[in-house]
Image 1: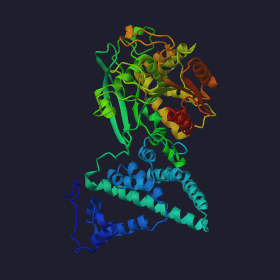
Image 2: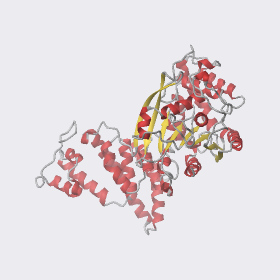
Image 3: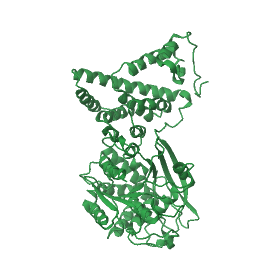
Image 4: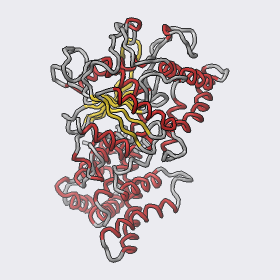
Length: 552
């Protein structure tokens, strides 16, 4: 029985309909599908469809991995769940990795992907598909076609084929027909609700679950705010877990270019999928993205010096990570039926998230030697482009940035105008002229800055404007567990990372100096990168971090 809410499937008995019989012959043991049942209401259209698809699937010269990459990207862009379900297994059979499939499915992370995730031809094909599928007055130009054709030509030259131009032209024509045809297919699938999937989300190649977890802030007995989190569970479900913590003024989306690397344990196109693969927990820090802040104890969201008015501190961000990790919802994903709390492989953060990672390492037990069974343990932390304490002069700098956002205006104007002004000065500071940041990534970073709730920015600025992890704390003031000084007493592996361009090199100098004092810490630089190296040079960041993680 048809699951479509729009068309009952039409399935003529064998031998009663020549078009249906021709489709059965092409399908083989599968027989008529739900798509065929909807097509057969228009018999001549179904006949033409069968001939065209047969030619593209069995008579073409486009490599199988490239063909399936194109089809799956179209399915993702056009929200055609049925198309994805049918072709993901074929894509895997043709050699597409979990990380590559994730990137193909992730239409919210702008191209280009991190270099090395795809071959040059695959990367060019992704861009070609996007330009032809997302049709607008400027989405596709002849130059885009030339770019893809050049990639095809280089591929053909690498095969040693004697007729380079002839095969290049054939592959370009076939690719164009493939993209056009599967756009038609995907839109027919949605328009006729094939298999009842028109309103379903396109699946992901991993077990991806979104969570909104209510957590306490202070006192700890009260639930005060929600943290938005995403768990990505690899098909190899026993893979170790990584926690990612974003910077001020960003959200989980900033990690989009490095997630495929962690899922594959390397860059698939470079043979890196022999390394360890990871499960991933992403979350928006309080007041950022889809996460909320605790209620405001003060009468204004402007910058306060009074600690009693704080709704966010660096230790509280670490408190959120721990509470998230031991929440029932996340325990079910990470631990399943296990009686204990499985340790985390590493907590990784950048900027504000990097300070959070260090606070987590100082505040909570590590993976060995702790009798505490109520807290989630971690083997390592990785802190990027951050500091163990507020650098001298930064408190006033954060006040100035808050002032820039408000500009003498109220909260509404601060949200609509002030954050745009902040983006104008923040992006050049984060990504200096020498940073190789593509325009598409710059646009997403700007969007994240502008969409950050004003209150979330103000509280984050206050947190960064006054913290010191090198000093210990009793935790009494915020009703939290105390912590020893950062450099003392934890059996913890630590990697400190900085983009070489961040702060004209001063951020890296500070972290390198910290590593020299911290006997369990290593320091690595991401050359040619700014404040968010996982955004402007994700492939270099991945190699630096991946090699270190693999050695744990």
